[in-house]
Image (cartoon, one colour):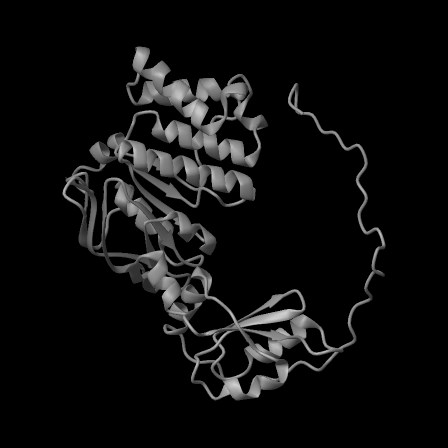
Length: 350
C-alpha cells in the first residue's frame, strides 16, 4: 500500500459457518484475512463452492461472521452494516435491474436511492453512459438488453454515487468475450482515474490478467494472496504438450494421461494434450514416445498446481479407456454450417 492509498477493506481471521444437508456445520469461509486499498483491483478466484459469494456478502454487511472481524471504510461490518451498504457499490450475481423500466429510468431510480440529483446526477449519467457505450439505448427497456448490456447497466447503477469501493460477484458469467473485456476496461478506468477500490469474484482464470492482486479460495480457505505473475510462476517448467497418437481419440488420450502418476492436469488442445507435470517426475520418461514439447505456463496452470497441493494424489490404478474408432469426420472442404444474409432486429436496433 503506497502512501497515497487508503485502506478500504480489512478482513481478519473471518469465519462463517453453515449447516450441510445432514445438518452438520461446515465453514463456508474459514479463517480468511486480507486487505484491499484504494486504486486496487483485486480478483477473488476459485471454483464453485469455494466461498467467494459468502465472503463478499460478509464484507457488505449482509451477513455476520461467526469469528473474526471485517472493517470496510473504517466501519465495522456488524455494527455499521447499513452505513457500509449506503457508501459502497455492490453488484450481486443477480443484479436487481427493473426489466420493465428503461435504461435511463433504472439509473434515475438508483440515483434517487443514493441521493444523487441535479447537475451532479446528469454529469455522472453522461460519464457512465459514455464509458459503457449505452448512450444509444437509454430509452430501451432493461428486459430487452443483451446479457452484456445488462451487466453494463448494472455496473452503471452501482457506480452512480461515486463510491470509493465496489464489490462485484461474478459480473462476467454468461457474458460474451467482447463484453467481458469491456467490463474489465471500465473497472480499470474507474480504478485508475478515480482511485476506486475493486473486489471482483470470477471463475474465469484468464481474467486474473486484469487484476493487481489475486485471492484464490478453495473450500472456504484463502490459499494465496499474490500477484498474478507469482501464481503463474508456480507452474514454471511444468507445462508440456504431447502429440496424440494415430488411431486414438484425443479425449481418450487425455484420460489416459490424466491417470498417470504425477500429472496434475491434462487438457486437450486440437490434436495435442497440454499437461502439467513436475519437471523431475519419473513420468517424464514415459512421455518421450509422444514427442513432448515444453510450453509456457499461464495463470490456470499455476492455479491447478496450487489446487493439487490441497488434494490427495490420484490413485495409480485408474483403468485406462480402451481405444475406440474415431468419430466420422467431415471431408476437408465440406460445408458444415452455412449462413446467408442473416438479420435479427430488436425494435430499431439491428
